Amino acid sequence: MDKKIKVGIGTDAWLPTLDGVCTTAKYYADIINKEYGEAVVITPKNPNAEDYKFPYPIYRYKSLFTFGEGYPVGWPFKEVFANDVIGMDCDVLHSHCPIATSYFFRRINRKKRIPVVLTYHTKYEYDFEARVPSKLLKMRAYGMTLNNIKSADEVWVTSDGTSDSLRKMGYEGDYIVMPNGCDLPLASITDNERDSIRRKHNIPKDVPILIFVGRMIWYKNVKLILDACRMLKNAGKDYRLLMVGMGPDEGAMKKYTRKISLEDKVIFTGQIIDRHELQTYYSAADLLVFPSLFDTNGLVVREAAASATPALLVEGSCAAEGISDGETGFLCDESAHSIYRKIEDIIGNKSLLDRVGIKAQNDIYISWEDAVKMAYERYQVVIDKFNSTPHGEYKY
Image (cartoon, rainbow, N blue to C red):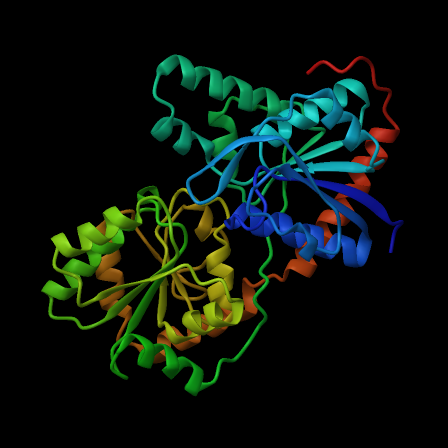
């Protein structure tokens, strides 16, 4: 192994906030601290933080408030914050968000140059278009984000398709594909454990189970899932759809479920924190239905594969990268009718679902240990390149 390094892991939110980016940052910090040197997490303050639980330091800088499901709004403008991070003597700073965290790292680099890696996880244009009220503010949001991206010494994406979002932001530079891993182990859940999910939700033994896992946000194409399920019901098909997660649109989704008379078919479980329990849910399901175009990597696809549960994905989406239809997963068009037809075709074919699930488990699963090992090896390249290149006045 190459030399030990110290990595500053920057993220706009940290536990107890929980989403895909937070999960990614946590596994980077865990594995770097255990295998490759030292990790320190740099993140805004959260009034519900329990940072004493972690074996590495969590540096919290000022936040103005929290919103949504506990997301803090960072305020990294005080010089003392930059000096604190400089005093940590990190070999590399790794930002997992091009908003407050990356702007913070820009301020640090005005005082002392430290190599910066940015992982672009999320299609931020969705949030900007949906949540920024005016055209002028949207332009400013795009401009600030672009400058934050360009300020990094190297940009990483979690899938090739994410580059489309980078280009929409105006970024024209190079990038590296660095896939995320999966923390769920390759596992065979017992029949009794799977049956416990059916007992808990009163699902008869022979009724197929569909599952969606993720934040409850409409732009993950959840409405297409619900509309497809209405078509299944109208066609006389029995099934249950488990909706696992929480989010700002959860109430509206429940209301829509009632509106289209699917209360007897759709079960909202809430967020499931316990990872073994979540894996049991995946294993109990026959098919993960995940038609999101928003997600840049689709951690849930690998999580399902860990339990040999195949996924139904939109062809051409980032989540579907590396998936062969009928081999390592199933592909459909971005429409409720296409989702319905695909489910109708395959849901009764248990041998096909089992074969594709096992193939997914063997071919598309990647552990976080393997993913972070690749990242660590790339850190070495970034650091060596940085140290061998003269640095003038910082321009960002």
